[in-house]
Length: 336
Image (cartoon, rainbow, N blue to C red; front, side):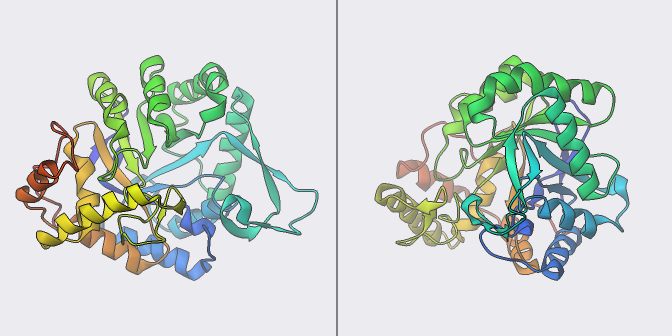
């Protein structure tokens, strides 16, 4: 599997990273055994980049990922986590669940937004303990949408110091608002952006500002949410988009994308996975999985060749704007 580095950091990332929100029981429970097997399947497929966060299952994702990687050589993989939410014990002691935040876990803790310098240090220290490692390779500011000024003024300088001290190898921001990501690229010296759902086959908001800025400044963008909450895996009435039922115009557009892909004999999810690699600022994709089968399917779809006439038809149908970059390279080969 192809590997590149994040910005000028030298931190390697594989073109496909495993997003580990599902290991934190995202929407539905996953057993410890299934979580471990999912990480093993990713490793066997050549994936060496793993992303998690305290937010995912109130720390469950970090604990499970750390356990699954414990026997692997630490220098053989890249580990990314996030800061911005501190986990504070809940006085109720887990009497309820965390489904209001999307995770099927007991509500043993509550999340407290904290983009202060002290909050960054405390968050990373707690993450290291849950992961069972002495360092992470990448630290991202997580969803600072409503805390942008504090994140820029306090959290970012703290991450910059940690990078200068060698505590982390690369720093960045992860969210689904491309304009705010572009602001961080302009105003800071971050290495990377994790952009969720805003540079996909369905919508290319990230192309307006973020991706050109990143390319011009030598920063890397990792694309998450390539299936737009599952809509591009199987467009149909009731399918979700941004974790809610897809509005009819959005569903109609997805169905048109499906029709084009079917005319060329390619699964829509293969086209969705390959599309972001057309832009030079894109270093890789982050996709989630809750089973080995899902991992293997994603890798298989990523390796499918996409015929050039398919991209041409998408443009002709008005489903891609003129000038939208599309991939021209061949997909990855099986690992030797």
